[in-house]
Image 1 (spheres, rainbow, N blue to C red):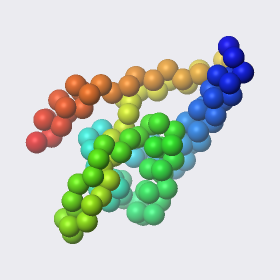
Image 2 (cartoon, rainbow, N blue to C red):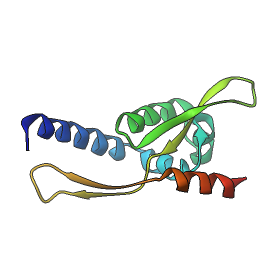
Image 3 (cartoon, helix red, strand yellow):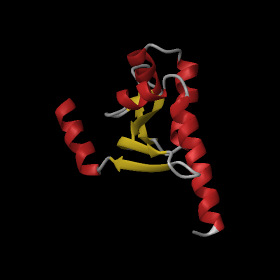
Length: 118
């Protein structure tokens, strides 16, 4: 494995583990199975909005959550809508660097879940 690949893997591992290790991150990922705004996520898991925004930023940076677009809020403001990028993650600590196995969400699954929500 090339040095740059190893360094990138170390950085990826660090950001994923850091994001998952923070309080409320797992709850946000669970709640973000369907597109939700930060306000909706904050209300759904009953955490302060500022904390929710910080966790969302960490999860997006780690590639675990994505901004799917923007929509108008009830107050008429444009808000970002987030959804998790995976359904499962497995972490293997048996080597020097943690290795991740991710079960990514497919676009087809996202569309199906959106239709079931309507």
